[in-house]
Image (cartoon, rainbow, N blue to C red; front, side):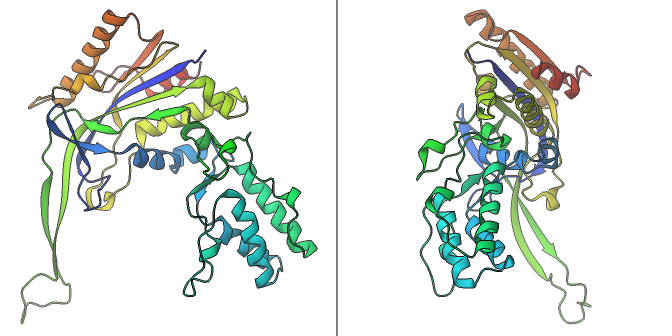
Length: 352
């Protein structure tokens, strides 16, 4: 039976724009009839898996997501002494095991080494590719069919185990994500604001032109975000070939990253380094449920939005328990406003 870890975080962002839409505006969503700021789950997951927190905790167990593995293979073959023509042909054959390759273009001679869709490579697959490339270069021959079994159903890539992998051309090597990550939304209604700015030309003395060297507009907003994650620990262990120790490392790294790492969009302009102020961790075999309904009615705290959000979230948790029975077997809370709990205690709790 599945054993779930559910995480509920409240994080306050100052004026910033960490996750933009196609027009450069902060992403939004309408919930409860009110416009909220939104940070997409895709943006969050990329920020977490590429963070120092995640990479250092799981060194050697993080994959690479790329279209350009064919180019990397081609370069390795060239570096090992293969001819240009052989390197390209062999790299195409190897990269093609992970997806359909793009068509050739005269202006981009290596474009046909790229996979059409992003593919996520586990460390085991990367090593197999490198070993094969070295062998082909040393023996000066093309790959044989039995050498092209490079995809692995069993691997130790924590990011693939947590967030999944889809290979359209090789579906039996897909990985069902063990972690579900909601889009983060503000607990209150928001108004996206315009920031008109000017830049001064340092060499303009003002004798002929006193105007700005550049003018522009950017958009930003601020808010307290609610974020929900659910991790199936049994699926995580299964995805990691049954390695319980590695699964706990992945779970701890994901939780620490969720609490301490934010998307980096426009960070140099706004300095938006943030950490969660509140984290509720739940453990149990019960059917998971988000507590986003706590904020269906926007929080209207004019002086202490965060405190009101915590109150609303905890009241909803209690109401859910009253209506459905206990929705978790055990819980731990980190509340920086009340000086209650710590991230270290949360990490110990979820990996017990």
